[in-house]
Amino acid sequence: MAKAAPAEQLKLLELQGLDARLKSLSNRRRSLENDPRITDLEAALSVANGELGAAKLAVHDAEAELKRAEADVEQVATRIERDEARLNSGTGLSKDLVALQKDIASLNKRRSDLEDVELEVLERLDGLRERQAAQQSIVDDIQGSFGGIRAELDAALAEVAAEENEVAGKRRDFAEGLDTEMLAVYEKTLARRGVGAARLFHGTSEGSGMQLSPGDLAEIKAAAEDDIVFCPDSGCILVRSAEWG
Image (cartoon, rainbow, N blue to C red):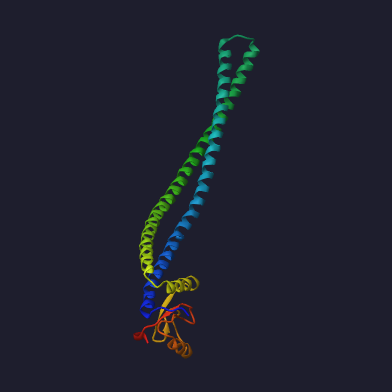
C-alpha cells in the first residue's frame, strides 16, 4: 500500500481543486467551440449561398438571352437599313422595288416582334437582378452575424486559454513540491477515475457523494494515518482528517 504523511495527503485536495478548475475550463472551451449558434448560422449561410448562386446563374442566363435578342434586333435593323438604301436609290426594275418594299415591311414587323422580346427579357432581367441583390443582402447579414458571434467566441476562448495557462502553471509548480510516490498514485487515479482525491467527511466520500458502509469505514479507520486509502465507490483517494470524522 502506498504511503504519505497525513499533511502531505491534505495537499492533494488543493491539487484536485486545480485539476477540477482545469477540467471546468476544458468543458467551457468545448462548449464555446461547439456553440450551436455557429452551427445554425453555418447551415443558414449554406442555404443562403446556394440561393444566391442560383440567383446569379439566372441573371447570367438572362443577360446572355438579352445579348442574343439585341443581336437579333441589330441584325434586322441592319438589313432594313440596307434595303431602304436600295429602295431610295430608285435603281432596279419596278417589280423588284415593290418586292423590296414588301420585304422592308416584313422586316419592320420582325424588328417590332424582336424588340418586344428584348423588352420582356430586359424587364425580367431587372427583376432577377433585384432578387440577386436581395439575396446578397441576406448573405451579408448572415455573414455579419457570423462574424460578430465568431469574434465574441474567439474573445471568450482567448480568456479560457489564458486562464488554462495560468492554472496549469500553478498546478505544475504545486505538483513539483509533492511527495513523488503519492503524486504518481494520484495521477494514475485521476486518469482512470476522473477524480484523483476527495475528502472523507463525516463518513461520506465527497468523491462519490455516498455515505460509506460501516464495514468500509471500519477498514479505513483501521488503516495507518500515512496509508493512502481509496473510496470504494468512486475509486479516488480519500483524504482523512481528524476534524472531519
